Image (cartoon, rainbow, N blue to C red):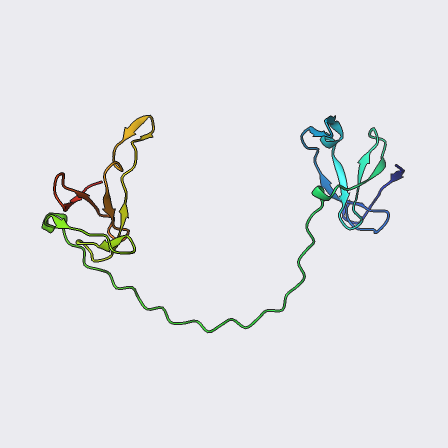
Length: 177
């Protein structure tokens, strides 16, 4: 451990005596436990030279600084090298999406819905592919029981329709939630 006096540059910032690079100031951090012992040195502010891999800590407000090696976890990652720009691939024209016709909920009769091999089926309301949600246990949401997923049902991601099974039949009917 050696003691040195640091100089100021034109911007009134401290510079490293080895490489003349500007030092980065780091506030003191939280108390750390190192090898089972309390490390109070981590709470003190320091001036870091990322180029040399050292940091300087002032000695009792005297203007003289102790030099320490910088731990690997405190080092900044190296700055990325400048990369030459590459020509961008040609942009394909955007085809406007076609809005699907969504039926009114009162116009949808009870329907038999069957899962296909991918676990989905066409939505009777908009024609998009609906996801099948298997029944699960009752869940507690905000301190209250939620029974919405206790019975098998289909959910459409496009029109956000939910189709629940009518009890005792193979028919599914549109449901609000």
